[in-house]
Image: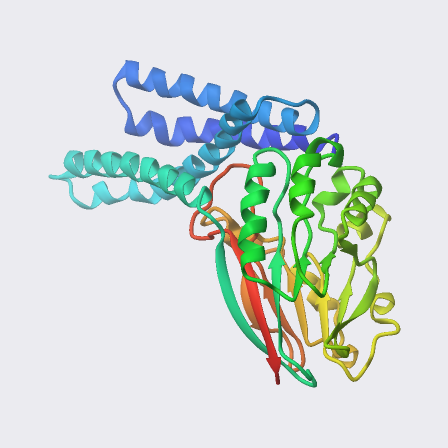
Length: 373
């Protein structure tokens, strides 16, 4: 899949760029020279997309160049959305024959300004520090309150390098969590390429431990070596298993973790919930770590899981792509009561994938306050 994904993605973006030009740019820009300038800009942007996908999967490039080609992904996404939104606006001038030219010009000017503002807002929000979301959750049978931090979808590699990781680690450590949960897609490149970032990640501090489960992106980059590296840095990888957390010498909670669902697609490191729950203390509350929200659909009421922590969706990352995400996942972000006994929390992602942009889906560090229910 890794070999074919860049070619498939590039083909899709080629179609998108064609639609942007013929259905939007040619209609709002009539002077020949400005239209030619935008045409060549779109060609350069598409070449940036090509460089992004081949650079991410087949060769390394300087950080400054990587930033530019990553932006090209976001530019294409946003201009494509504006192109789609522009089409129904073309009907408005037909409702007033006398003002048809005025309305058409007004719509074109508005659409151009909107596209520029949309792009600018995406870059600004994408560069913002992750927002700390405070979430209080009562757990039945919990004997003593504790707090936890969840980080998800950091996507170390590319634009998420050691300086970014350093800042996030400081944010997390300043919260002084009892335990830290890393719910997948933390590393998105060969681990040998991001040793400095890994060293920064290893500075996370939590007295009850740091726990990790795989996301789908870890499977793309020599997952065996990656998991061994995490273990060497003192991070506990939960591989279809559970641990009991103790606080003040008292059993506190079961923490179970499963491999990502992507493992089932390729027949390697497949998730197994029954194995993950085996041997837990039944009288304690149970927290399940699973990267994709749709794994919650595999939980049976009899398995008595109090809450599942997930990521994967990025909260849609760039609006309105959240509507595509919810076609695949039952929950987009935040806290939900999935069933009478099971809640689910979906983290919007602490980093980003692809373009360094976010629109109406700010990056997140979740700070849980688990209380006696």
